[in-house]
Amino acid sequence: MPPPVQHSETLVDSNTDLSFLAHKEAALIPALVGTRLGEVASNPQPIEISVDASQQSKKEPLSVGTQRGAPHSVCHGRVSDPEAMVPPAWWKSVFADEMYLKTDGDVVEDADITLSEIRLLEADPVIQPVLAKGRHQVNHHGEEREKERNHKNRVLDLCCGQGRHTLKLVELYPGLELHGHDQSEYLIQLARSRAALAPQEAKDRMAFTIGDCRSIPHPDESFALVLIMGNSFGYFASDNADSMVLREVERVLQPGGVVVLDVTDGAYMRENFSARSWEWIDDTMITCRERQLSKDKKRLISREVVILADKGVIRDQFYQERLYDYHELAELMREAGLKMASLEEDKLVTGQESKRGEDLGMMGQRDFVVAYKPLQEGA
Image (cartoon, rainbow, N blue to C red):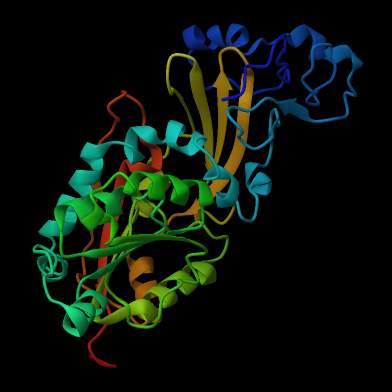
């Protein structure tokens, strides 16, 4: 970890919107981020951080220090149109380093939540036959064992992140072969490092690859089960790109294979999202979020500002997620050649608060959607 930056100051635009904080907490923010509003009140443009801010061009954006090699960041101040600030491939930066595991760690690093999600898989009658094949270690040899491994018991954890579901399923089901695929090199490397700590037998049944979820690096009909867990669907700016993901899933599924989609309950979130929220990540880091619906009401636009007590703003990022309702997802599945296993959705409710007592945002209530690839065309 590099040494902390010495003698730096953070200047915050006088128009920065902190109205979402209660008055008591808002009083902490100037001290927390080192605000000197009087110096910038006459100029609403962000200012570059330095030891001597007066020597910097006030036409340049605010450059902020980052933590442990995180991407260079800019504090944008008040933003009138957050939707316009969302990068086309926002996921490449949001999941590029350890910051994601800090800000979302109360869910995605909670072993109890991961296990509860797997228990929901185990309780579904459509998924049960697939998992049942993996309850016992495959002891066959030669071609028979290879056929069993390659056809019956292979599971794809698509958009697997740091591999939390893969690692747990390998532990619970000694007859399963798990493949994790994600676009984040950082998260896949973390998954691999965690997998390296498993017993050799388990390591032999795990593999992780890096790449786009619209291009899965496996042959046709490779998997009995495909998982898209943890609200990892709906990131693209167009519904057609999301459809491409499901068509690729259909390609790699065996006939009769099952796909599970764990995604934000769009209908609920559209009516119940918090426009502004904040949470302490630890004793020295706070995250402030702003959210609003896109102009077409189909997506939730989010802004996340991360502040360190001794450095000020270290991250200011924008992202969006498509809010699908159950019937829209059913139509996407149908178009991809998949059939819904149920006409009604199951709700996956993580809870109102995490263990650290914070708002769960889009992870609080999700739809648990199960579909399958017909055994033959038209079945």
